[in-house]
Image 1 (cartoon, rainbow, N blue to C red):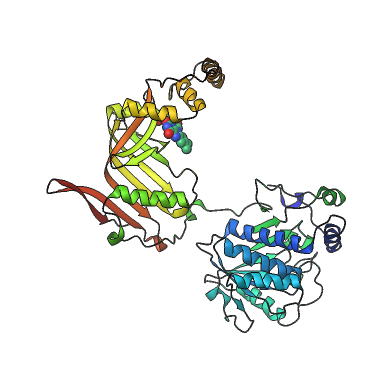
Image 2: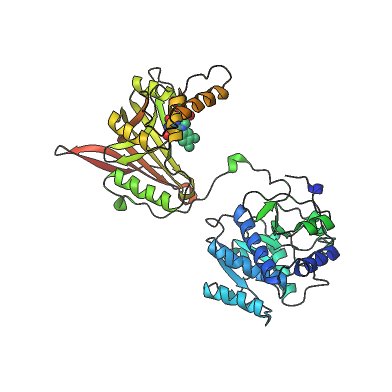
Length: 464
Ligand SMILES: Cc1cc2nc3c(=O)[nH]c(=O)nc-3n(C[C@H](O)[C@H](O)[C@H](O)COP(=O)(O)O)c2cc1C
């Protein structure tokens, strides 16, 4: 993350020239650039404002390119799970813009006239996007944009109530492209998304979130304008410029919104309930939804936790594989009671499972061992899990790995080491937790009870 002055800022003339170069000798078309700009805006918004808390997004679009960026952003926001609405008072007949409108209409995204807008935008919208004027705008906004700019300004002046977040695309509308908010009475965005490269006025931006989008700047432009821009990471279409706002860790909390989770609706058998939630986690595409914290304590009663991967779950319990000489194995040999914890962040869910642990049969462990990639099989032989690695550390492990790799290069069967295999936790208690609004989370506990010699499960709601 570079400091405030370490990145390049363009003058208005340079910004115009860069656009001309892109759409001239560099072969871009205006709709391509608009698509990438709108996508960058939508991804920047999604980086900071999650749709679970900020779903209602009003985009106010001007008649030019900035308005087009806003239309594209609204479309992407729809696909990202937001509920966008658009106010587009001065439409043009240009087929590019007409196409963007048709695309939004096909997604049933509502268009509001200026007259339709509520007097207090904060009542109806979590986010208001200012897509009115970009860097080619001069002078003062004309009706109805003068009034719309004013509405953005008064939003920022609302004190003591939850107000809509303001996001400006490239230039806060009404700002001077180089001087910024000259008399201090203009829009004060919470987020500014600069496009291609920030314009000089962005130096005057004092809101908490400054992002750069438009990941397409070719080297010819970087060289000509000696541009220094922050690097984009991975496949991201946006990058934060400058420091993220200071976050008070004690204030980090989500206001969860989750589906109903009622006693009457849950499965009578907690394993079936677990499977349902596990399927939800799989369907949500979570990374390693089978990762679980396993907590054990030996005879000294001191607990220890680590992540292991669930490799099977059925009516007999939860299975994972490990080394039988590891710390967890030693503790389990002294005390078979253990607990498992799953946390599925994106679903606002956690599941606690408690019970006693026994080894799975050697036959089953062998079967699983041979189903793993050969590299993992060799790794399991090499690793004397939880013991101190002698000598030159990592190198010793690699050396041993290489030797075994050669030994088994003929693809012969790699025997499962005796000290490796599976454990099964046989559950005697479950708790399913789901985050809800205002800390009124769901907690449903299953405990076993005998009815006519049959083991059934009692479901009780615990206070959050
Ligand atoms: C995502 C993830 C998955 C893991 N899966 C396993 C596993 O399935 N089995 C295992 O023995 N260790 C697994 N580990 C490593 C353990 O967390 C731990 O380091 C190791 O088992 C030694 O723990 P112990 O010394 O308490 O016995 C995993 C670690 C992570 C972060």
